Length: 85
Image (cartoon, rainbow, N blue to C red; front, side, top):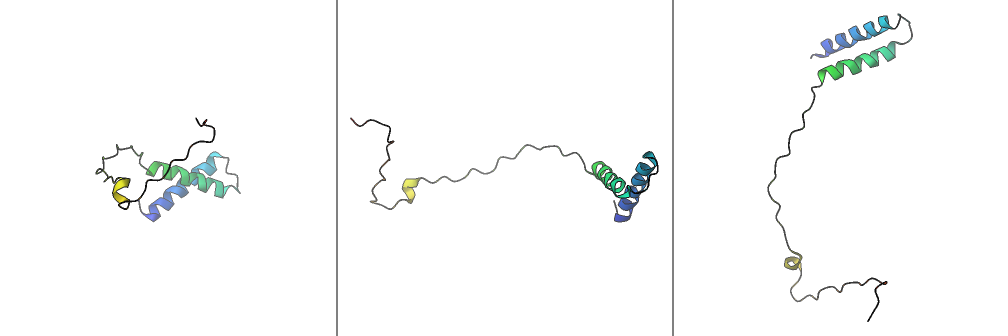
């Protein structure tokens, strides 16, 4: 829809809203904004959610492959609430 056609459609609907509300002056901005909402809602196609495509599997790396050779493993922390035997 061209800009001019869009403008004309909004103006036509805003005028209809003005007439329906009793031709009271001073509400032009409200009528225009409501007309914009109406025109946009008509113009936007309803989007249908498409299923996601399965992507290529990600390459996995192990932590051991990235560690330096000969490095000592980190010690695990124990919880303070556990009883020592």
